[in-house]
Image (cartoon, helix red, strand yellow):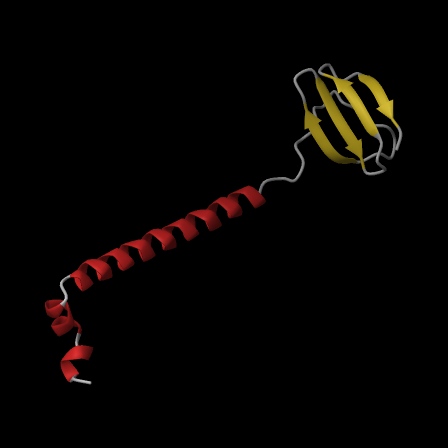
Length: 101
């Protein structure tokens, strides 16, 4: 093997497409790196948000019940307690229905 085959400048002169390939690989590497940084930043922001949305003040849960999941629908607020009970509230905060587990 000759020394000039391993030298980048000599190889680029012999095959001009190598310079284009080097620029393309470098550009793609930069784009991939920026994409990874963006994904990590979005995950960081998203995972630092509170797990459950805040319940409105006018909703009173039964004694000893803690919310495990909260769903805000157009006309209803559905709360699933840690015991598996489903509580259906209207927008005013009045308990409309209660479904036992």
